[in-house]
Length: 425
Image (tube, rainbow, N blue to C red; front, side):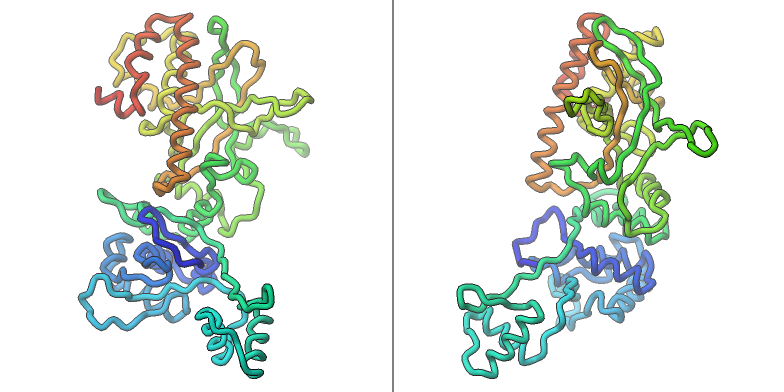
């Protein structure tokens, strides 16, 4: 891995090294300890100044459990314990966390030559040249423009936010998953972080993993349609002819067994969340609907409940109010806090569209609830806020032509970043 200045927002976890924990039949204590030591690495991402105290504090292990986990990781070569001259030095490097490299190891002679090339001293005598060619066959160096160059090793990493391990208040996601007592959810969390791309895919790509919502029907609202969506697609079993449904699907082989069980554990620990979108786009000239393509945001679900502190909460709540006025005849002359509590208690998925859209379904994108404040993440969040503002303006248009009550509510919540801030108004 290239040595770069370390970001304060995340650390890089070598996924192949992390898999060794499962291969050596180690458990959640060793995995949590590995996470903690990586969170304390320096700029090289391979030497950690964090020790037993950090593991106890962040992962909730006892000192005995933490020491035993470190010992097992050291015995398996997943980490290497370093000698620390001053036992009380907080910034001393205590552990080396190697990265995965499938190249054959260098002999002492070959390593000396590689180090010389790094220092700008190419091999001169025949013996050194032969050693250099052996190192070349092993993939450590190469010849370009008649000069020797070191091949930079690139390992497969998952970028984990520091807040996954350590938070300022309460317990971290790592702490909660350790209490769960199973290794699978931790391994799946690392793999999901590896596959998440917020900027381009809004989370984990829907071609890999997604949730489905079917349309229970619609009602007219002036020049608009209100669609109520319910989780799960309906299909007919070809063998029995029975009607069945599938709420979520994935199209790849995951490293962890019991995928759905492990994902449920992540949902319960609020490590993951599902961002729900309408899916009614027409991607080609065949006039076929692209039901797996996210369109307008419809809310964010954690454990089946709408989340308040996300940009999607504002348009999702507004859509609910429109649905309530039209289909339930509900009285919305109530305090906003009561209306929000009622909305969250029901946590419906409501899509409002123009009458020209004949059918709407829903698709949910999985994303991690804890995210590092990287530049890409900031850009994604700004784009998400713009997307939600556009959706809210569209819903305001529907409200203005059909309900004066809704217009007054929209005026109150228009400039709020999320529903938590609305409640505190």
